[in-house]
Image 1: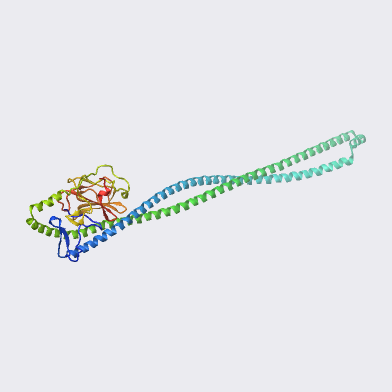
Image 2: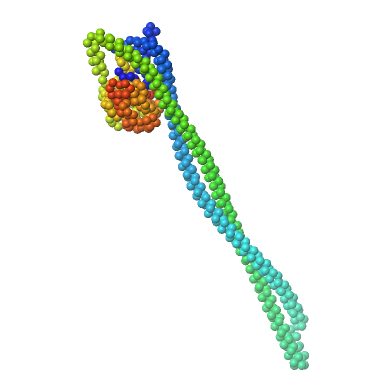
Length: 479
């Protein structure tokens, strides 16, 4: 019977004698299926140390496996947060760019408006100078009007004092015709001068009214323009202030999101380190557990040699019927055919009971729980499947390779971690197609069937561990 593979806490591939009446040692099946103790010098202490190391490794492995799953979940959540933060930062950057464009347009409009205000201020200064000139002209016109009013008043008073008959008196009293003619000419000049003064006075009044009207119109127009520019400037200033506030808020949001992103990336790096440490610990524990098992296996092999020697001596004394009986019994131990054909299961491993394909097509040579070597106390913690050398071994479910190396007793061994404390083991391979750390899919080839690890014939050792405890593969794989 081939040596046993990597065991869990309930593995009974080898057991010590617990009876106080029997000598301490290892039990193996003798001829006819009977068990007998075989004492080996130094074996109890060696096996006790190996068992302690193996038990500690198997007990700690589920805890580390659970911690690994939780860390992986936290790492996935952190990566999702980072993706969401980057998406939000992209939106904020786009919004900030839009606000900056609007702010640029607003500030450009303000600059143009300032130029208009400056031009208007220049026009106001020019208009103010024109107003001052008009005001000076107005004062001159007012002074001329006053003088003209005084002159007209004097002439009107004189005309009133002389009366309406003055012209007739002059005509009747004049004795010298030439003097009379000159007098008439004089009066005619005076009359025209009065009319011209009146016309000039009226023109002065008209110009004065026009000047006052122009002054009022220009003042009103300038005040209206200045008011309009002030309103537009206030509106643009308000818009600029609003956009600057929005930009400040966006900058604050961007800074806050940048800080969150940096924190999430740091968390991701820390979780990645923890996950790597857990994976290294799981692989190291698997190696340490196998080393502990190999120490016990060495003692078992030494006992096996001694048992074989004694069995040969007993066989020489046995009858032909006694020799043929075990052979017939061995022939009847072959199990049913199993097949890896059919669809793969893509759900969670915990829900895959009865739905998984077998790793290879072949016949069961040893079933889960069968006695090993005829010793009822030594049980198989997996199954042995007969298959041709070089047949591809396929993963029964997707997972990560946590161990891929040669181990004494198990030969070339592959261990897949399916998460949540579920492991599958594939031993006695001819070659390994995957390395530790590789992620494999369900149905993907991971090794080829062989007889490594001291097997007499080609076959595959296949086992399933649930939280470090052996589980019957027949309950997980399709019948």
